[in-house]
Length: 175
Image (cartoon, rainbow, N blue to C red; front, top):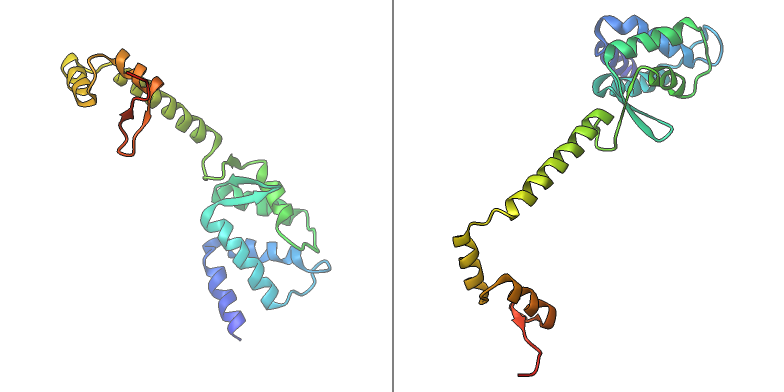
């Protein structure tokens, strides 16, 4: 009895598309127009509900994102074929993959990922420009803090010496 209550609640999540979902679950019967145990139908509906809520599915180790309208359209295509004996949702996923947008492991589409990479590139270029913009006063203070009179001297010290425990330079050249 609890299974039927759970099935009814799960089906309610599909709203006006309940009849289509019910018809789609019929494709999991072992024979055309065959019976499906309520527990099996509940499992199928629960799996479909995850897709319905997120719009994200995996097929052949690739992730896709799809809209509810495209899910509905794909379920209709599957139902119209009147196939039966499904063991999983892969047939539906194959139909949906033609209309879905491929996404990365982070859930980004190819265009979103390209935009993110472009933003990173722009930020790196801006950071490089900032490095060269240290004011003469800031450069003098920085040199004084490091105990050098020129950056050239600093580079020479680092090349000849090694770091001390406090992070400073230890000069190992003989005086």
